[in-house]
Length: 141
Length: 300
Image 1: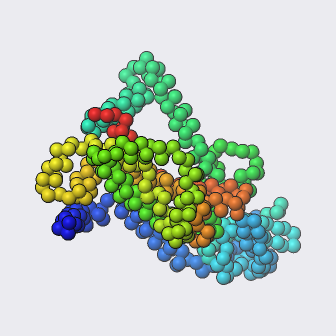
Image 2: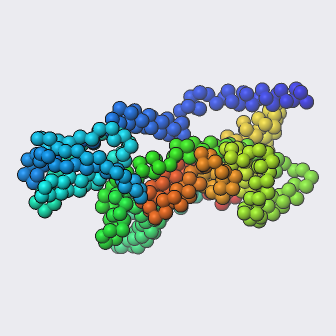
Image 3: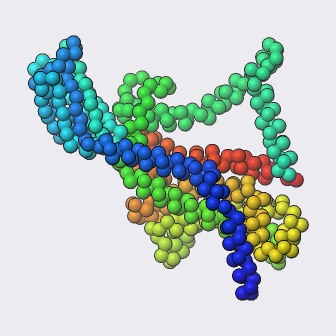
């Protein structure tokens, strides 16, 4: 009985040995898993390097000239909620910046001047993604 | 036998393609003769593909409100992957995926081993074999839902509630798989098994070293059926998993649908994320799967 059991185990070990490392590692299943892991690693690396959370941009008029002193409000949009936003003002180049926006995925930017207004909706592909937007104010807006 | 089946299979497929291959028509009458086959094939393939197209179309819509605004359109107007990103951030998707992979792996490996052992024993003659076969076939008639409460009580007694093994346990054998393997093992000539035995092979070696390599299509079918069964399981995990972090993907999908009721773009995106591994698995094993189906339909 003991000998029989030993013989069975020995043969199963031999069977496993017959599966060479090459056959175990180089097959389409392993390749698909490796490819998926490489892709995931690459995406994670890219996300880690670009998650500063800066959303900036320019406000220009219909002629492309910068609009100074425009009120820019950014508001996070959830699936069903809207959160309280932050507001800033554009400088002489029409430039505005919001930093530390690391929990945004979807947001609304509202630009208001004395005689015009523009609203745009944007989304990011990961939290903290750095994004630059250009908002054009035209006569109708 | 497999060669004969392969020939039959290929010739059938070739006949269909030949009939539908418009570009191979040698003259105008041949072209007209083939046209109905081509059109019928095209319409059928579009009809089958349409639900998948709609699933993808809704999943890539952004913003979600665009689904309800304006005139409904069949055309894919905008392609945005944002809904997938939103789903990823709203739920612990990697954890659900991990749970599903562990449970499915346990179920597939377990079912391969137990089904093989059962199938190998059923290829032998022993006292009461017909009774065992009748018992197994009778067991097929018991509705799955009837077995849930006893299975829960057993799993509870084993202390396996809220564990991967507990979820995988009922999927570690299925009768159809046993019969598929039994048929495949029976096709192997006895002389080959006798030769292995004379060479000193143990029963375990005969099963895993001789019969398994000869029954690859049947094993692939077992893997696919076991995979689909464990991957799509909903009721059983719902019964025994109460910890949110132990939920597999289908359970996560159901709770997600409840939580975001009406957010179809997100629900469809999540459905695609659940579907992708099954599609990849089928693509990797489709050749063996088709071979196995053909083999089981034509006896030598």
